[in-house]
Length: 489
Image (cartoon, rainbow, N blue to C red; front, side, top):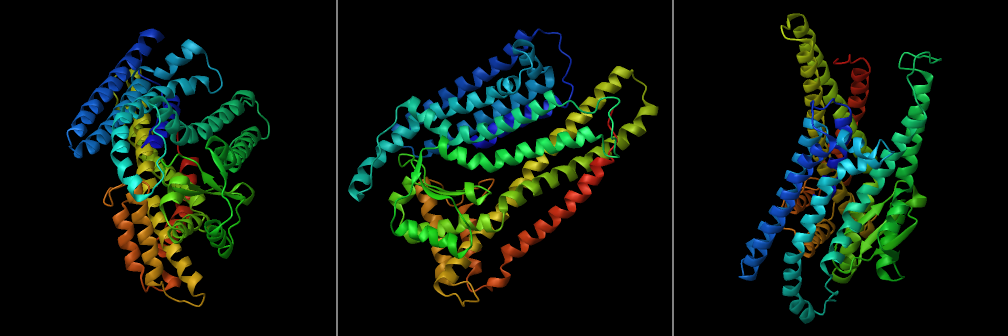
């Protein structure tokens, strides 16, 4: 959950900017101490606890690996929880701005940094466990003839994971935040006396939205190209594997700029298709996967990734998440407005107390919307993964027999085998649940159910088709509800 923690850290800062924090008479330095002090204690606890698990691993307790992994997850969750409390209880973001000024992106980045630092501390602490595991498998690797990459030092290990897991999130988030803040700063809208008013706002407001949208589109389009520069990648050399991967793209009419070897020192076993525009779309395969997996299974993995492109999962997942968030925010907002409207004439306290209640309701609506969007995102993402698995099985079936009408058991079995190999190489238990992908075992079971299924009516396709239709409806209803939603103040 490295990337999820980084994204949540930034989202909480953005959400805190829309809500008035609790009143605090303390200076910015005191609020910084109250924020960073407990964060430091969380980091110290993580290092100490993972060290204990490492010593138990030395005594032969393999369950210590799971204990160390749970520890780093708990540390990240604690850091996020304290981050949220610091933002909303006494205004940590305001304290940062008081110390460094309201510079474009700088204050948001600094305000978001404490949980990100804890992520890096947890990675550094886990290095001891990783080193023990690597040493334990060296002998088997030599006997099997596998390549044995050199063991990284602790700080190179931390930099490796920052570069491969944290930077790909921070880079686009920072670019999007900087663009949005720059447009707001240098293109003020909504002022009195603005001309060209429309029912939805002034003409300047709509031009600002268009500029914001253009910046977002540009960043999304060029992001994959930038990511191939952040990660160490080189073009994959000619051979059977490249021919197989290129054939998967060609028979599904998916254009890519290049097929790249993602150099990770044999540490990461993964493949991906990056990019929305064909000119900036790439297939990436890690060196660890190429070294340990035969070409037919890599073809199955590539077919899965191409399935995401063919079904436009990235765009639909974003639209679905936005639709779910808008619908939930509208429902909660209208409900909160109704309760506050009913309560206002009957309120016996002071105006200040009622204003505090309104801010609390706003915070509750915002946090509930964020949590609901996260839950909905996982629900939709897992079903799109099942559809991509089904697409891979169908593609492999048609590659062997273009006239086939049903999913060939051999094709589905190859995808099942590929998923199992990826899980084994990555050290993931088949029953381990992952928020975006679900468990490997569940995905394998659903692929097994597809054997002999009609290619024109596979269950995952029907499910995702309904989700897309629901997304369109929810976007329309959510936009209309939020457009007419009264303020809570």
